[in-house]
Length: 115
Image (tube, rainbow, N blue to C red; front, side, top):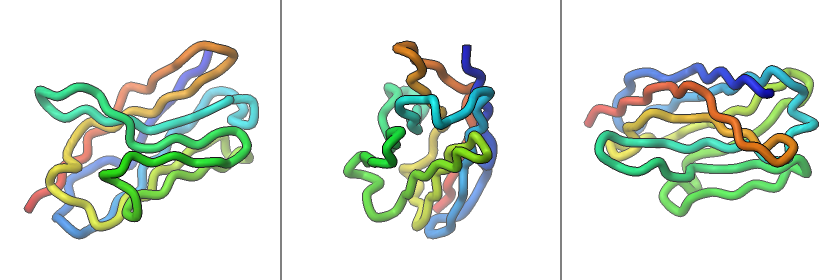
């Protein structure tokens, strides 16, 4: 079992930045892949970014160059640095972990970007 707790969401203006954190209940070194997904009202949940245990990353086209995913295994935490935020980035952001073949989700954190 893995518990994931997100934090760092909030209300910002377009062009500003936020950093999301996802704290895991197990050593993140043992998690194969962690990621951030988001879901806007009336839309399906979509991929934002992932980071594997070897440090390789993957980003959705709509956040490339603006968002950065990173992990700190010493703190069992994954981060999502979000710069140059746009109103269309408004969504609930969820942390995800692939651990021994099973996917786990956090409860989500709201990000709202005003124009």
